[in-house]
Image 1: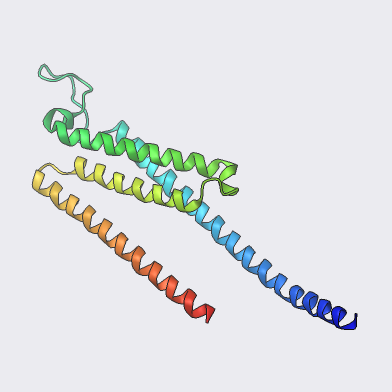
Image 2: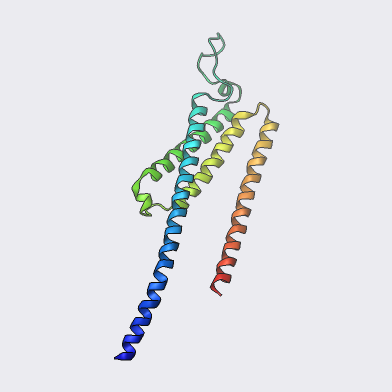
Length: 180
């Protein structure tokens, strides 16, 4: 009976020592999650604001009262229809993705892990890539210049994939060293 009591007391003592450490790590994880939540909200609101403004005032502006053009139609639509369609589609995708992320972040279920922050983070990355594509389609007058912007978008995507790959391999390496 004494041995059993000693073992129980040792376990309780050991358990009490690890509980504050676990609570500290849980508080740290919750704090990081709240920061990430705020970061995603900021990005989503910023992207929604930019895309909303670009939708109200498209690149090139609007035609004035002119016998050759209908007043209020976008200039880019008449000059380069495919570029306007590209701008319109990707700007719309970016706007809707931003609104979806904002709605999920405002929902209390996200805090309960129904939709994880990693999924929302991925949506924001795709949202910003769509925003860059809309910018590329609407910002340049010549096709050659817009190709430079598209090459820049491809370079950013490649950089992101490489950075994520390197960061994940470093994290795995650090986890294996920490377990040893």
